[in-house]
Amino acid sequence: MDVETPPLWLLTGERGAGKTTLCRLLADYARAAGWRVAGLLSPAVFQAGLKTGILVEDLVSGQARPLASAVPRPPFDLPLGRWFFDPTVLGWGNRILQDCPPCDLLIVDEIGPLELLRGEGWTAGLAALLRPDLRLGLVVVRPELEGLLRARLPVQETIRLENAGNIEEQARRWWLLLQRAAA
Image 1 (cartoon, rainbow, N blue to C red):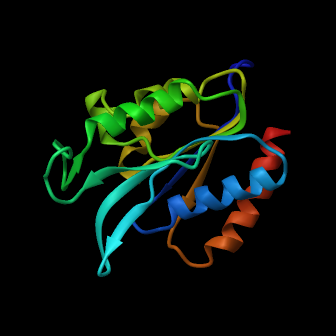
Image 2: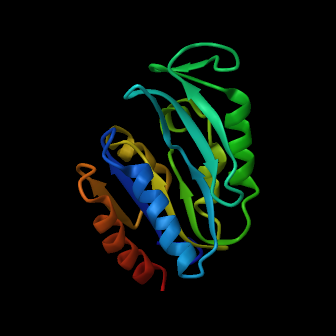
């Protein structure tokens, strides 16, 4: 690994495994330890037990915006699989990643087909994870795209979530390991 490149961890798991929840808990642990945290979370939106959308949340300001909808309607007009994304919110998230301040933990939840297959979405996240003013990076990617991400970024370690069982216990364990990696 290049001396200038910060440690980069990859978080992967199937849909519903708890990736975003784990990222949120790790961000909370990092803040409690005095770390500066930046980046984006992408929590799901559920209605009547069904996933109907995706938000994006700025980890510095706490501001959140609707990113994707299961139903095509303005401004959700960028299709990808079963989702329709809002291009202006993708741009907002990209600017957050591009302009993020120096930090101890940068979380990018998630890099996916838009970025790795189409060159769209949060492309600034790929560059931000390599910044020398970053202590540690954590990037979320689906298992089927892990190889593509590894071809683009020098991943040091991998967190594989098998299911959402006892996510708080897993977060505590992974936080200890992340601290050691960043020391």
